[in-house]
Image (cartoon, rainbow, N blue to C red; front, side, top):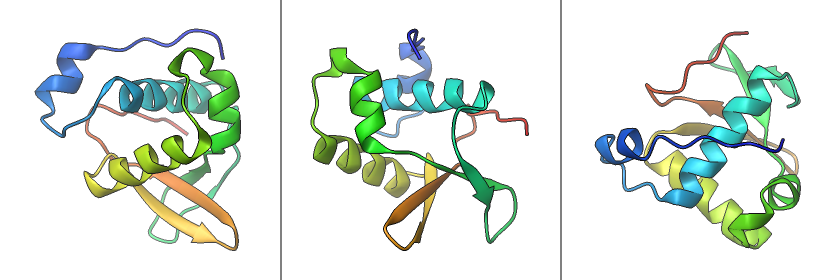
Length: 106
């Protein structure tokens, strides 16, 4: 994915303490879902959950200049503030979008 769009005012208005890296990850994930580029499986509580691979995010968002560990920390923080819920199966983590600004149609 080559283009990301970040509505900075909307991110600030959410008052979740998100930063530019979080916003870039959210937009990347939203675009990948719209384009059907992410592996997904049913979520135990309904809906679907998506596999977000930190190494692929690092490769696809090179201007962020962040390490895989940093991406994982941002994903964890976004789970803590309610942007995503996470579910682990084996060594894989799957994420379900929760934020009100995050519309997904499947």
